[in-house]
Image (cartoon, rainbow, N blue to C red; front, side, top):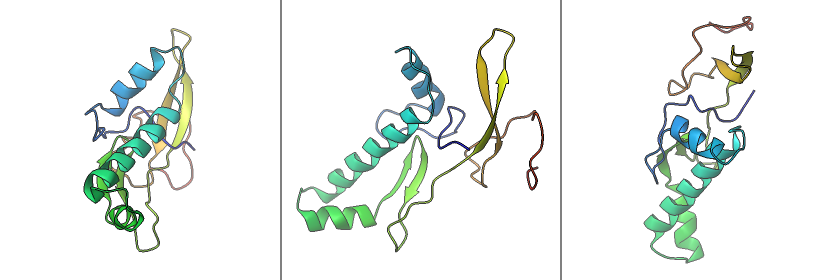
Length: 130
């Protein structure tokens, strides 16, 4: 399983970048775009959104702003429930070695998050996958 994938069909609320664009920019640094860029960017997106809406650093105003978060991020939709938990996409992926020697991650299960496209071809099927 993985937490984030460049194939996610979500955009950053801060920069407007798609997951693919964020991944490409990350890889220009020489680092592989694992789940880190999407996870980190969405964290900054939520923090910026909370403080923008709180219009203060007052603890109570910030706490209330967090509870009211309903934001589309590069990681997916972030909305906290009454237990202060936001359910985010977790995917199952298979790695495929391409002809150029590079590896590509293919999402084969998306937990019902329609913003995470499934690979057209799968190496093998998992029980319960389509």
